[in-house]
Image (cartoon, rainbow, N blue to C red; front, side, top):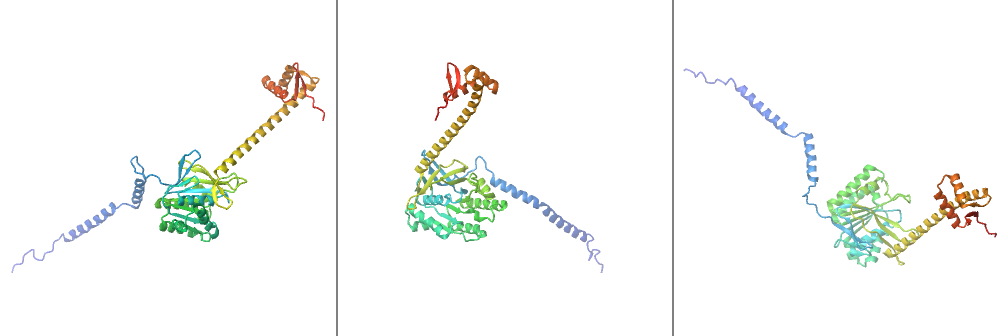
Length: 392
């Protein structure tokens, strides 16, 4: 039997084919790996995506700003303030009326109008964190709001979430705020004592981080967050304390300052910084029964009195300066007249005075005239003598 010469003969290039397939597979994997972006390229693309999302163009649709409160100025002009989606600040010296001012704003939001303030929100939801006062004093916030508004407990308690947090640890405050905002969906958040949210108000990193967190909370939840912080202790320093105060001032859309008028119980709330138009100032005080009332008229009278006293002091200082100058000029004139034999012509007095002081003749003429008008010198037929002091 003749065998086929090709029977059971293995192809000589089988191994080569396998190698080619393997090589092709490896090349495919390598090409795919090369095609994948590197970590650096991925990072750059993420940055580009942020830039695309944050770019504002001429046709970018930006929602109109929504404000929570407004104040009518004495000229009738209405200015809105405390915009939603942003943070704001109320500052003052210790015991200068910050909490009292917050009570008025809280009452305004609930009632719709209080004194010269108006609410711009229908049935607002309000979150109020008090980190400084005792539970008793925190409870007085609602007691005073009831007195001002006449609203019942059902209305106030359904719209206001007030929390006394003085005993809560610092590291719990921000998580509590996040949770409360998530649960209550407030329109306005008051934080009376934002300094308690940081271990140190002079820690730059911690302070900057907190302000950033508050900004994101306000933006993400479309609420106005109002932070209360003391100013520095020096009477003439009205900056908020530490790095926390610096960052809060930089980022806040509105900064209000409460000042207690010297010698009175009148508290004036004025805007010191505003991203847009500054709201008008307004004043409050306490009635005999302790109720918070408007004090705009009292503040006006205090201001008029202060302006009158200031003008009086300026006039007194001006008069004292004038009298001092007269005395100085009189000493020069008296010396010249005495050397001339106790009398001298006006022209000669002028010449000798010019020679002695180097002043020009017109200046000296005004000095001589002023001394005559003041009764310190006497002129008779152009002869000048020193006025005789009557015996006492």
